[in-house]
Image (cartoon, rainbow, N blue to C red):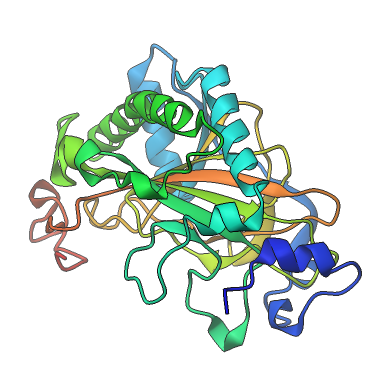
Length: 316
């Protein structure tokens, strides 16, 4: 018997949702969201010629918010549009075509088409299906998880990955300079050009009870940074001062999350976030998780550690 996908459950859920998708009262969006206030997270113009200003803005956002949005980032709008187009088209394929890319039962890899990802706390399930695959470096890519349909899927994803390098390099340069390091040192400490880019497509079907369900429960990312584009359906929420807020989307912006990276020795802080779902529309998001190679030991950067500032984390 195959795994029941949320997309299929949604097709039969008209007024209610199965019990296992109803979150506990301390998680339900209707009960835990600060209503009427949208979180205006910092918006940073990456094309600003004043690099010191950009560095200050990124450092402030990474230290105090754990997330920000970047505009004028250099990825052509058409490239992002095509990425979204083929991702959406994959999830609109017949079930048997999607299942060809499903993870094998018992597989330790997170790559592939699937539903369950996080450990299900108290047996509660997330209202989301997903597709995971690596898009960089070439030595890490396993094309068996890249859909062959739509036919332009590979071309459009490779084009997006090519442009993503510029954004990653700019962000790491600013984060590195903000720590008092040379511009290349933070990236090099996490693997340099061998850092892994892991693309995930989150597909959140329409949900008749968005007040009770979550697309993804509260979590921080295990990546160094996450760079995300959403479709036009709002759903991202962030925890600020122990309260949950909707995050305002800026058109054509990339959303950047600081992950659980330890190179900064605690200066940059990961953001606790979650995803809501929508009653009328399907929400989709495309995060890219940028992380060190699995065989690289990473710890606080040696230049950031001294008697006055001992290491706050163990290397791992």
